[in-house]
Length: 98
Image (cartoon, rainbow, N blue to C red; front, side):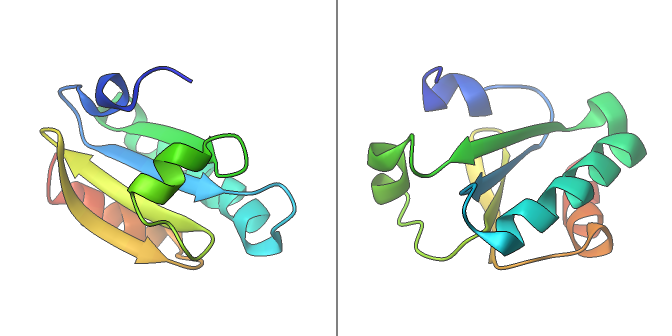
């Protein structure tokens, strides 16, 4: 994976979903992420990070529950949520930074 700093160093809000393939709620987030992209297009960046393949980052960011969603804006963490969230909740949070 590219360096995390590069992932969040963009001019749009970045929604990151920390997930695992074996975790059911994580898999349900795929449809929500597609909906977010459909609604917001290039006004946001959506990234999925597999916790099993990125253990150092997962530990550094203290990702304990799955899925964990975070929003970065201007390289700063501005929102974090654990567990399943629907597209209304996430789009409301993202819209604060667009």
